[in-house]
Amino acid sequence: MKTTLTFAVLAWAASTACAHGDTHVATKPAFNAEKVEERTFGREGDPKKVTRTIKLDMTDAFRFTPADVAVKRGETVKFVVVNSGKVLHEMVLGTTEELKAHAELMKKFPDMEHADANMAHVKPGAKGEIVWQFTQAGEYQFACLISGHYEAGMVGKVVVK
Image (cartoon, rainbow, N blue to C red):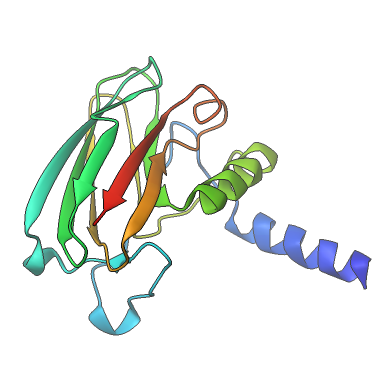
């Protein structure tokens, strides 16, 4: 049983592995209200219902600016994420537990390709976007989960009131 479970996890991870390095080309599918998944920290937001745009800068000093963001419960926010550095960075929204687990998975499968609504992979000098509706009050995080970046402190906080 344990071997079967291990094999299933490895098969799943391998099936998602492709290109998470500088050549990452995964793109998010267009917004589809019927396929929106409710998560602990909210859900993909409808771009037509954005109430506020928040610009975040990512640098090779492994920091986000600003590092703390406050939003209202129910608010749909568009994050415009700018990579001012010379290496690939990403912004991934989630709970602390989810981000830690994802960071560990990224260590094991650094070339894993993924393009979920709660993440933006941004090449050097480029920008990306995340549109998110925060449906639950609480404290959540955003982080760069590229190997070594999270561990270096590339983490921010979202407070939803």
